[in-house]
Image (tube, rainbow over all chains, first blue to last red; front, side, top):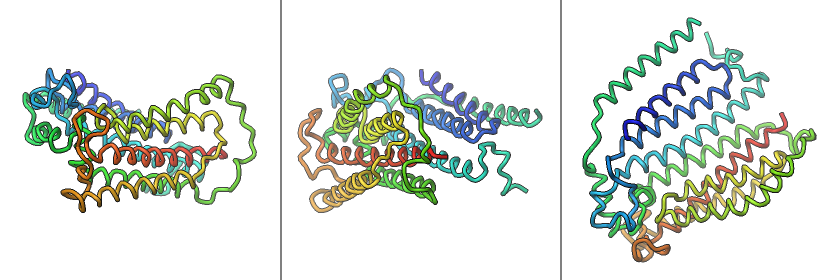
Length: 118
Length: 233
């Protein structure tokens, strides 16, 4: 189970990087980056998974006394929660800059922006 | 064509690295030391049923304060970048086609329910999967629905800023109260811990997480509003 999730995560990272490297349209590159971001999150959650255990929430299924034997690692989950939120912030910033780029050259094609190229 | 070949070669190399990592990976059989500490101490020290929430709001509360600050900075920068030199007023006067009956009625029906669900998710953050960040994102999705129905609608930035700054001040204020009344910054034991699994338990966590939810919702809404105000290009 953890292997399926981890493989999916790595494949998503590769798909995202492929999309970011081959597309010329800035919006498509941003979407590709979010796909890669999702892949990284999936890999991190998969690392915290322990076989045959349940979510780290103490309720009828997980009595407090047995918590250590019954729950999966909560730390990667907290980490990924943070990573998702920061990922949204990064995406919003990329979109704002894409708008500014479009405003300056009236195009979203990355090859039209050569100002820093030598 | 040659470029695409390079890309594929690069990704192939990366895939080799990843498969090497996967081959050498063996899942843990027991919790590691820090996870074991959290599993053993959350119930009696924090009183929150959701251990992830206990980690985010109390054990690593300072990191969450930093995270909320990063979000605030992002919202501020998006506002700064997008508002620079923009014309005032309602769009460019260009008429958009009406949104359609389904979207309009659906929005009117769904927006209050979505806001209610968002509030439910962040108030119950210490008991169920969910919490301030998820609830805040749900609140912002109601704003997104409003903006989809009428892209030229202007959301009041003054209201968003007021909610956001009040929530931030209360968050830091509760953290400082923790220094005075309990063990340290962002200590949740300024209120009684109560019994595990009830709504009024886990000390200050439900209050802190509710204000985080309002703050995150306001920040996401401000980003959405700024992005939608670029409609007139």
